[in-house]
Amino acid sequence: MPIVSNSISIVIPVLNEALNISRLLVHLNEKSAGGHISEIIVVDGHSQDNTAALVKEFSKTSSIAIQLIYSETGRAKQMNTGAKASIGSVLYFLHADSLPPQNFDSLIISEIKKQHLAGCFKMRFDSNHWWLALVSWATRFNWSICRGGDQSLFITKGVFDEIGGFDQEYIIYEDQMLTNQLYKRKQFVVIQHWIVTSARLYEKKGVWRVQYLFLMIYLKKWLGGSADEIYTYYKKHI
Image (tube, rainbow, N blue to C red; front, side):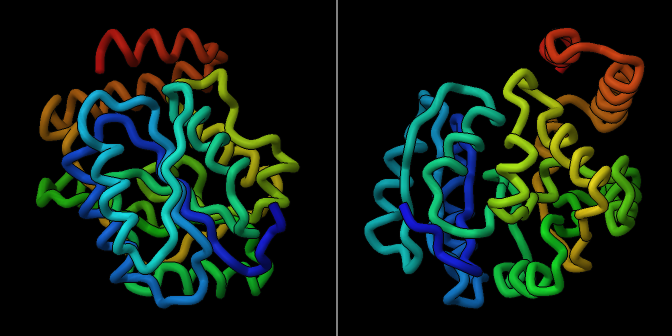
């Protein structure tokens, strides 16, 4: 398929996201500036709820073209599958429970025209917990340690292909692996507008417990832990 210049393909990996996907699709239609988005690609890792049915139903009335495709479970695999199916020259990877700001598409294209070929938005949680507010505040800084998949990621398809996409060995931490590559290339910008993401994991497991476990995952990777070791730890504790 031919690539459409200066257009965005939004790639959303989902697994059992029936509670969030419709809200996100409505949000993307309402908050985009128009004319910059070539498609929304929802990549389902074979959900057991009615996620797929909701996407199909919404696609009938969406002002933005929506594709529903399937992939093996795993965000890295799902996002790589979506990237391969895309026609936009810019990829925008977005979690189902994260809501980008008003005119997010124009903000992304504006950075691309400045030769900022990859980046994200600063992020805040939909929670009033003081620690999560502090974490949110820190995401405005352009430091790799402050990055995470909930902030979303835009990247030109050319750079994405040069890097080789997401490392599919990583069931988790796949977003950090890619952004680390971008920081090495000095090709990352943080757009100073808020994306709002769900604090559902913190609410379910406890703020301090989740923060400690994520810190341990970061340290394990820094100390040379393998993808399997990190996933085993994550699966056991989270």
